[in-house]
Length: 184
View 1 (tube, rainbow, N blue to C red):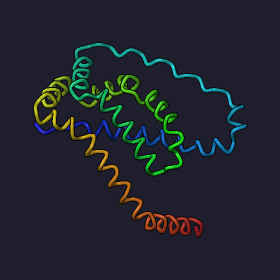
View 2: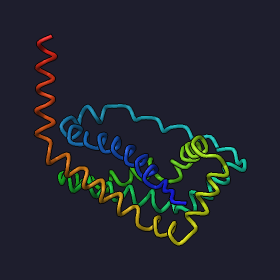
View 3: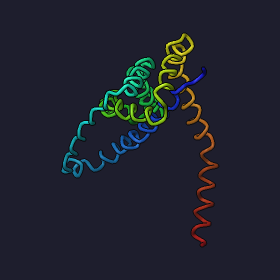
View 4: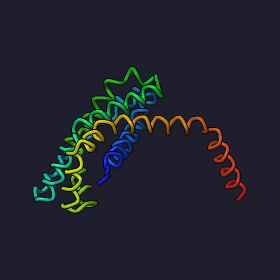
């Protein structure tokens, strides 16, 4: 059985990280408006996630996540995406420790686990989850677990380079559409 959920989970995390980095990009703006930022009331911490019911399906998903080393993978993903962000925007290096603490707090495996369990339970039956767990416990499954974070990061880098190399084309198309919309 050749099944790999890691890219789906990586996409989930990458999407969340992308949103987090958009927020982190506001650091530069916040520096320019430090006085107003200091006066802003602190946001309240979100309520703790409700405990996920420990039925057999949930226990099967937990076993799958354990077999996939999701705790370690989540931390690696956050660290790799943060490094890519720093490479893309070197001015953010001064805030790397702040961003890392924030991301590890809000995108840790522990904070994501209830949502991941719900996600997997909604997409896979208990027997499918058990089959996936069996796969990830095979030598090929273990190799996939080991290699996929690096491959996913490299793939994301290739995608970013491709977009950057062709950004002029996108900008031209956007300007053209903007002109068309203004003529209507």
